[in-house]
Length: 506
Image (cartoon, rainbow, N blue to C red; front, side, top):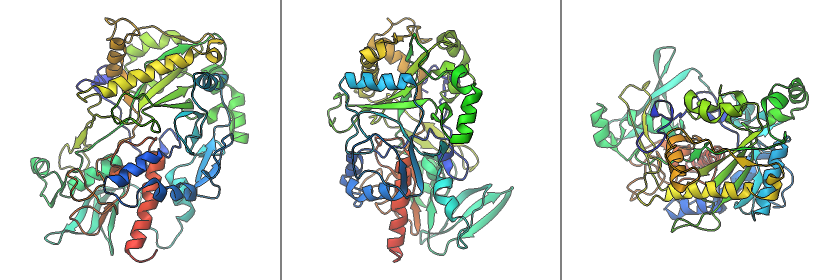
């Protein structure tokens, strides 16, 4: 990858997606985040009526069954929906100290799913009783015995069937146990395969960029810019801190403690309910970009109550595709020590990527070109460095300094020739060890027909194809100020209403 992930294994980035009932909601970090009011208002301003925050907000309330405490924004949460939303009942002392330090640094304590996002907060999660709540367990399981619902697991759709001439979708082709089948639709086909597989499926079906489809030998049915817009949230794991007291999530006192398992199994509480180590979030506005808005965070600071050393490099480093040699330099000397990390994540990158088919074989994974940090003005890098500087500033406040919080100054391999903590050093580090939290959007971008990047309209109908819609994160037209599972649910809920409206049942 040119210019980023240069220190990853084979220079490649991990981009896993969930192949299961519930999709990637069965493997994600379970962070519940709706996004910013301005996100949805911008969608509508781009020519997508019905997608403003005012239009979308009721779906947030309808879906959730909230069990969160400590927030003062009344009217922003509700009980009784399908989707369990909960606080993490266990918090490390380090998390409490970090949130206090952030407030000492001037960040308001906020409900980031409430009135305003900019500030600091503990994480809200898609969990219930300490257990993951996925799209399958929340929305599908309660209705799976309906007589008009048929589910075929172990099946992969390979093509949308479209009538030549009329450009009307009438079904799908799928493979199960090595055998090819067809399923015919009486009304319409809805593609909901996710940010990568929905565009792949459209292109395999002859809907996509004409020149690219011809390159891989697929007959062109509709020339559309499928896959030509791809946004993602870069995240950086190269900042590590030590403390001089036992206040963090460590292997011995949490994960390997038998009492932790008893507490989790009997009461659904304790340290095993912490979601991937994520305990708190800070949302900051850097004011670097010309179109910056004080209500819209540019960078998220993700507080991890431990570090990649907590599991001795077995699992966590692999999620970011960090080589063992790099781990051995940066994290191995910290094994058994009290460490924590804060990951900056860029919400609104200027850099735009794209994706293509590898071949016309539906079982070949697509090719992705994320193009992190490719914006000519270098705003993305500047925003990420601003996030690093804010992390350092927060950690210098008394709530963290009473535990001796100190940055680890071991240079990132490949960046040793830069002065540690210089802007040039951090730019090198960002380009070397950048990762993804798998928030890809835009590959089937929603927009009016005159938008040259648009694939679907505001009712999620594929431009120029009858009876075919896309309903997942691929339609999101801009990077969203959120971890994308809740926006995905909103697209599904809104899409369901649009379908019912168009068929006269709502």
